[in-house]
Image 1: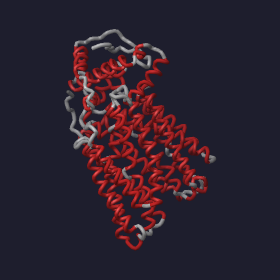
Image 2: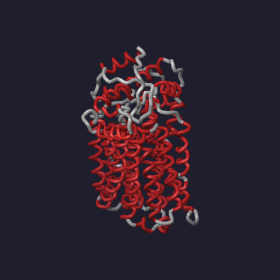
Image 3: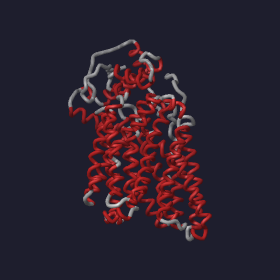
Image 4: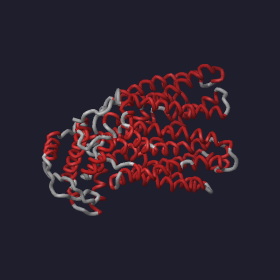
Length: 528
C-alpha cells in the first residue's frame, strides 16, 4: 500500500508545487488545443475575415475547414498512440510542439483559402497529439491522491485557450489591414515554442522508465518528483509497485506475443499493432468502451447547443452584434469557472459523484430551457423577462458542464489503462473526442434550425442517459495507476505477490532488449 504524503484535492496540489508546475507546463498543450479550436469559429463572425476568405461564408466550406481541423486532430491522436510508446513522453511533447510551429506558417501567411485549409489540417494534427500525450504525462507523474486535480489543469488550459481566442479576436477587430486576423493566428506560435522546449525542461515519466526496466533512473526521477529522498518509504513503495506492474505486464505481453522477445524493427511494428488490437479484446474492452463513450456524452449532453443558441437568443432579445459576441464570451468564462471549481471536488468527492451531480443539474437546466423555448421562442421580444431567465439557465448549465463532464472526460481515460496500453487507450479516447466534436456541432446546428426546444429536449435525453451510464464506471479516486486491474476484475494478485517477493529479494536475471530495441538493466519473467 502507498502511504499518503499530501491531502487530496486542491490542498494537496498546493503542497506539491513541483508536480503542479510540471502539470501546468504540460497543460500548455491543452491551451494550444483550445486556442486553435476557437480561432476559426470566432474569425468567421468577423466581416473583414469573411471578405478576405469569402468561401468561409458558405456553410459547406466552413464545415469543410472545420472537418479538416477535426480530421487532423483524429489523425494526430492515432499517431501519438504509437509515438508515445516508441519514444519518451517528454520527447513526444516536443515533437508535437515542432509540428505546431510548422502549422503556424501556412495559417499566418495564408495567401489563399487552400493554404488556410492546409494550415488548419497540420495544426489539427499537432493539437491531436497534445490531446493524447498531455493527460498521459500528467497522470504518470502525479501522486494518486492529487492526480485528478492535476489532470483538471488540462481542461482548464483548453477552456482558457478557447476563451483567449475569443477575446483576442474580439479585441483585434478594430485593427486595420490584415492584422485583425493574422495577429490572433500568429499568437499560436507562443504555446508552440513553449511546448517545443518542454522536452528539455521536464523530467521523464518514471512509469515510462519503469516499463522499459530502466529502474534506477525511474527511482531517481520519482524521488525528484516527490521531493523526497530515494530511500524514503513512500518513494520506495511507489517505485516497487511500478516495477511489479512493469514485470507483470511484460509477462502478459510475452505470453500473448512471443515476438516481443526478438529484437527487430518488423517485430516492433507487429507488436505495436497487436497492442492496438489488445484494447478491444476481452481483458480491456470495457476500459476502451468507457474511454470512447465518455467523449460521446461530453459533446452531446448539450454544450454545443448552448454555444450555438446563445447568440440566437441574444439576437432575439434585441441585442446588437457586439453584445451577441460578448454573451458568447461570457459563456466561455462561466465554463472556465466551472472547470476551476473541479480542482476542489474531483479528488475529494470522487469522479463518479461529480459526473452524476453534473448530469443531474444539467438535466434540470436543459428541461427548463426546452420548456421555455417551446412556449416563448416564437416572440422573445414580447417575453424579455422569460428570455433572460432562459439565458440564466443556459449559464448555469454551462457551469455544471464545466465543473463535471468537461474536465473528467480528460481525466478518466488517462487513468484506466495499464502502462503498455495507456497511450493507445488515450489515443482512442482523443480520436473519439475529435469525431464527436465535429458530429455534435453539425447535429446542434441542424436541430437548432428546425426547432430550438427539440434540440434541448434531445440533449436532455442524452444527459439522462449519461447519468445512468455513470453508474457502471468504476471510481478511480485515490487509486494508484497500478491498481486499475483490480477495479476492472482483472486481478491476479498472487502473480504480483510473487513478482514483488522476487524483487524484494534482489532477483536480477540477465538484461534483455525492450520492444523498442533499447538494452535494459531490468528483469524479465517468463513464468511466475
